[in-house]
Length: 89
Image 1 (cartoon, rainbow, N blue to C red):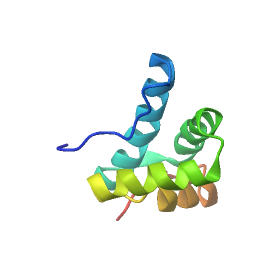
Image 2 (cartoon, helix red, strand yellow; image 1 turned 45 degrees about the horizontal axis):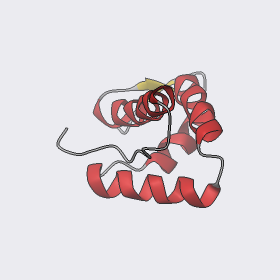
Image 3 (cartoon, helix red, strand yellow; image 1 turned 120 degrees about the horizontal axis):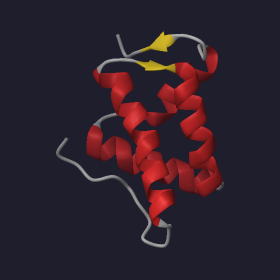
Image 4 (cartoon, rainbow, N blue to C red; image 1 turned 60 degrees about the vertical axis):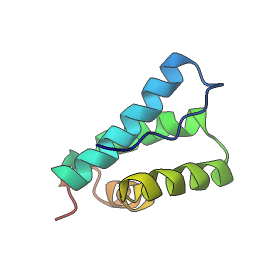
């Protein structure tokens, strides 16, 4: 991992850790696999911290530019296959 997470310094340490935890799920999707429901759970917490859709899109875009990982696609797949292992393969 040679990139930084898109974090807001106004967030609490717990909020930063929760956002990183969500992005860790996105990374795991591309690098191995995740359980769809785990992604959904982490995404729900992410949305508590970042309720604005516009801000979410900007953060996702920043993360994708840095990592190459599309968070939106991972969330959509997790929603459609919540009880399954999902991966990029």
